[in-house]
Figure 1 (tube, rainbow, N blue to C red):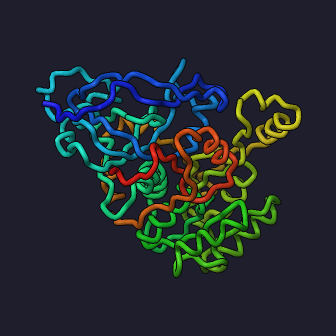
Figure 2: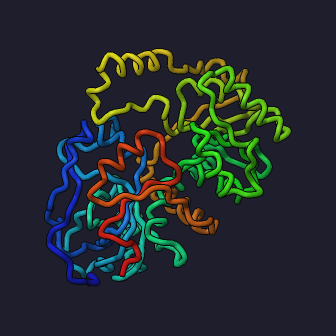
Figure 3: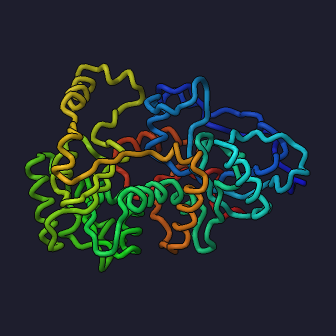
Length: 395
């Protein structure tokens, strides 16, 4: 039967109909059910991790965004309240499982949790709430030495970096890898994964103020010559990459992990060596600014973005065999139905025994819209975390 605890019948959640950050409203919402179905785990949320997919879903620019009113959010950590550990719990599930394999995996793994456990989880949507009902296989116990804020800063961005580098990039010891936005959540975790795998790295940042964040975290691995403050001039940026390659004694990068794209795409692609893989998982250089999509029609903002869009890089697939390079793109949403692969990647990440992720900025739950605006600006380092209900120790 379900392992039960006394829980409120309602929860607080940020909800909106996609299109504007201003549309976010903090509402009291009834829990879908007061008891877990088989394979479900009810978590009292203590921390929420922000991701760029959240920005795109709130603005309505993400193809997977639900129609109508919804609760955004992919990533959270907290304390287990209830567990639907067996089929005898007698309740229909409220979680929308991605596929039959996901349901079976959740039912199998639910018995590994109990009330009081500290967990971190990922969901397609719904994390911007004080309680979350999650499939058991999408949860992991937070390491004892980590805070819950650090737990909410790991899974999504670590999965993103690990999948891009290991599955698509097929990184090997000794290879040279370029990591864009290396002071952000994904970038810092990418550097940690590369160090663990024995690869060499060059990182780029958008501001000189972020360089010391990288150097402090990766003493003995990253040096000032290996952290590039991207020039706004593509020609100068190309020269910056050539200088960093000379520092490593390499002719070209084996992998580029790119969340910036835009005017930096072509110089990055050109800096790849034979067999190089350009892995794209974002386009920060093209990210819209402002609370609403409608601001893109502003003559000053919209025309600038339209100009960037018209001048966006194009790759001719007929030229790729001669160049001996590849371009790959991905986002993690599709992996919710690739259950075995998702579980395998998560298990590998926790087995690497990486140091806790860097939490750069924290906000109160009530200030979540302001946190999204800051995150959207690109001025943050590390992970932006929302704290729900004061301290995060679970007591």
